[in-house]
Image (cartoon, rainbow, N blue to C red; front, side):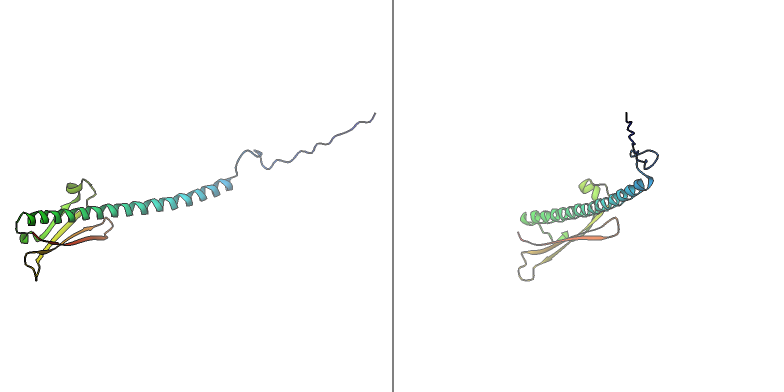
Length: 147
């Protein structure tokens, strides 16, 4: 009888744990790739936050300027003189809009009677503010007010 010997060749293991784990280099590379991706997302988030806050302040400034123009239109249509309305006033953002971010809006009103028709007035309302990073913002509205 013939005996057959079967030789089974075992593969050598790649490392002590076999194929079940990650090497330190693989973990460090994956953490580096994840860190770069998260930093780019954080930059995008921060930029969008700044743009959003700037847009909110600009909308608030437009609301304040329009509020003053409507007040002058109502006074002119009621027959009151609006010449004494020229001036500058500081408006705290929290008292006007409820946003406690410490921004102060400066609203300046300028009224000039028309040179040709003295019954109508050219009105300019300017609202300025300073952003938290020191940037200046300004909104200017001009209109003609007539009784």
